[in-house]
Length: 72
Image (cartoon, rainbow, N blue to C red; front, top):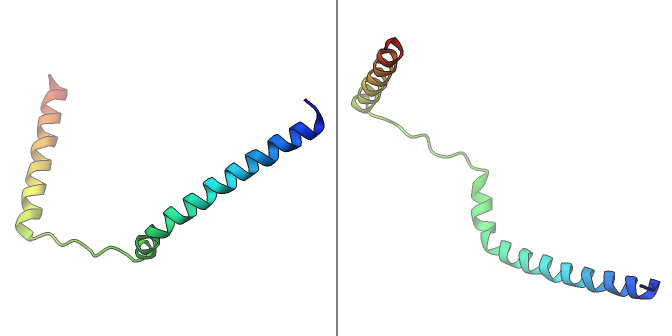
């Protein structure tokens, strides 16, 4: 390949990449609203006392089963 052909091929590739970049930027514009909310902390989820007790009991059952399996 001659030098001019290489430069022409590079210019074509740059043009294609710029077009793709523009498409991606325009597509990302629709997500700017979501991105602006990303910085805000999420609301803290609150569990009832009953729910915490059920979760704790289930975990204790899992630990007991795991301990029993380890003894075998």
